[in-house]
Length: 249
Image 1: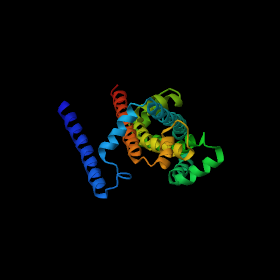
Image 2: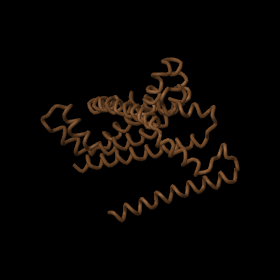
Image 3: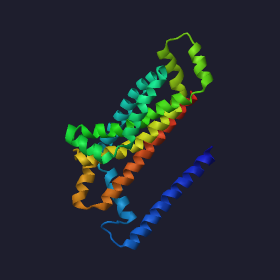
Image 4: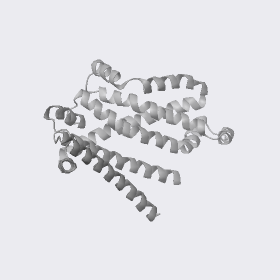
C-alpha cells in the first residue's frame, strides 16, 4: 500500500513538474516578464501569500462561503430527494429545473443578480445556482441506482417511510453524494471567486483579483491561482478520506 501511495505521489509531482516546465518554456519564448512571469517569481509571490496573515483570512472566508452553500444544497437536496423517493413522478419537475440552472450562462445570471439583489448577497446566490443542481442531481441519480431488491426489502420493513429513506437509502447513496460534493466544491470555489470579483467583495480573494486589474501584477495573480489549487486539492483529499472512513464503518 505504501509503495502504491509513493508511486501515485511520484506521478503527481511529475505531472506538476511537467506543467511548470511547459509554462516556463512558453514564458521564455514570449519574452514578456509582465504578462508571462517566470516560475521563480510566481513561487516567490506564493511564499509572500503564505506568510501574509490577511491571505489566510481571505481564503478562509471564500472557503466558508462555499461550504455554507454546499451544506445548504445538501440539506435541500435530501429533502427533495425524500420527496422524489415518495413521489417518483415529481422528477418531471426537478429535471427541467436542473437543466435550466446548469445551462443558463453564468455571466447573465451574475449580472442580473448583481443588479437585482446587490453585491453583498449576490455571490451566495450565484454560487448556489451553480452548486445546487450538481448536488441535487447526485441525490436523484443515487436513489435511482439503488438495487431494486434493496428497495423491495426496505418497503417490507415496519418502520416509517422517513426513517426508511434516511436510515436505509442515504447510507447506500453516500458514495454518489460525496462524488457530487467533490464535483461541486472545486466548481463552487471558482464560481465564488468570480462572483467576489464581479461584486468586488471587501476582504475576499475576488477583491485581490479585482485590484490586479489595475496593478497588472500577473505574478501575484498566478501565485493566487497556485495557492487556490493547493487549498482545493487539500480539502478534496480530506473529503475523500472522510468519505472512505464513513463507507468503511
